[in-house]
Image (cartoon, rainbow, N blue to C red):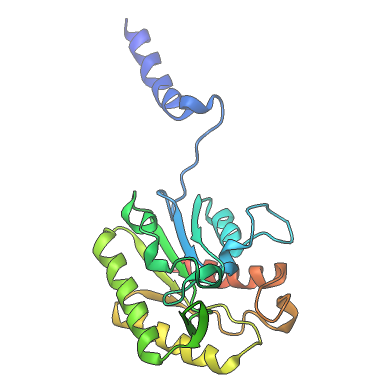
Length: 224
């Protein structure tokens, strides 16, 4: 009887991790055991989760590094202020599934590149500083209202290629100031997307995605 009890105690942990996956151990990311959620624009939406592929996204590289599952809520052309898909899509705050569902360990916001403009009658209209500031402030307020304190929120400075440097400075400064106001970690990407790291002055090639991922990984490797 004593031997049977001892055997049961020894094999119970093995059965627990074996579970429904057969012989494959289920790993749990130390950094993000509940996964990573990314809300973003085309710099997130247009890329894939294929390691080594030319179109592997920065978010995929980050997830691979931390052995964490990444869920995206991203749409080309979108931002804090501007609806995506040529003014027919939605803004970040219009994706409640990102913040109202099961709380992730990390929520990273990648965006702002499109917020130099807003939409009016389907056309782009240059956005004022106040309009951008209000949109960022409202979104960060919403995240902090709906997400538990256990979720680490990260604001990624808008990844910006060589095109339109004046708006880069303007929009990035507004987003950084709002992150600081809300006590949320801000990760700069300034200088990551150099001319040789973009395909069209805006969107990263593989070297560009790697450069963004390295900024994020380096910051997340530091204590919160």
